[in-house]
Image (tube, rainbow, N blue to C red):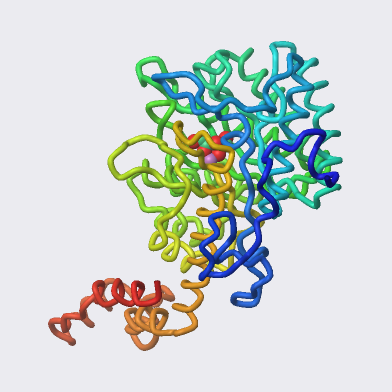
Length: 442
Ligand code: XUL
Ligand code: CO
């Protein structure tokens, strides 16, 4: 038994998941994710930077608003919080190592349960930070990002940094400080803010302007503390329109970019985009990626999917090849993710109760994304896709169109041009042709 498996092996009978190629029918093998395969000048491992999410995989227990846990974890048995947390870390690193993924992500309270004593919580997290550090060294696994859970505890029912009570805001700050300390100590490459309850349930009791200013203030303090303590990575904001609040301030990529610009935070922040959050906001995932890429803020991804019939965050594992192919076209065109990776912020269903289910879920998600990368690269290499889109704007590449783009024309010039050139010819958008073209490569 290797050092990567603790005293107890939690996923017995499952070995290292290997790449076996598309013809394999082994459900515990990769058919597309070949970490060393080079696509567009980089290995798949470098492009995708996959991460396992501690919370869904090792803390989530299948409970929902209508019923309690269905998944009873052998690593969640011991009476003492720190002992339980060490067992959980053993299970997590066994799992990540068997999948062969380079990264993991956590919230502070995923790593170890917190009580209500701030200093005791700090002790607990520091103890686990030392433990995780050893695990990282032994396995080569790295921390893609850390974050603080500022939404589960009852004190955050009216928000965390945006809470109307300063005493609660201080608790949020304390948790961010401790989570940043852990992230820095573990060499975490990024730090995430997902504003779970940073929003409102009713405008009747809310001073939105003041709350948003408090939020910006907290972010500035986090940046100041992180930079003063050696954190060189990016801070990410993860947009989501609602749930658990009625309206979350970080509604979508465009809203967050406006907020960052308004509060002069663009130098330190970028975006962590989640598929199911995009669809909840009434967008496609591709839309959110494009908005971030156009602003140079495409930082990282939380991979999952929603459900066409349900209007909430179902956080299912990604399996939609078309959605991911369209997404990969944008990611490749943007020269990849800026500092982040692809974190599986996804959970197995409440009735998926075999230890193998967690493997099947991750393998399916990993292969979907890897296959989409291969397809998107073929589409780009073929060249027709880029050419059609470029040609569509050809009228701006020379003459009056080029002057317009450079700001060299007035409204009178447009009048003269329109009058001189008559009614423009109709030019097809060729959407169906392009859709068929994407399908040709799938
Ligand atoms: C919730 C969500 C979070 C963040 C981290 O919808 O996505 O898990 O990713 O707090
Ligand atoms: Co997320």
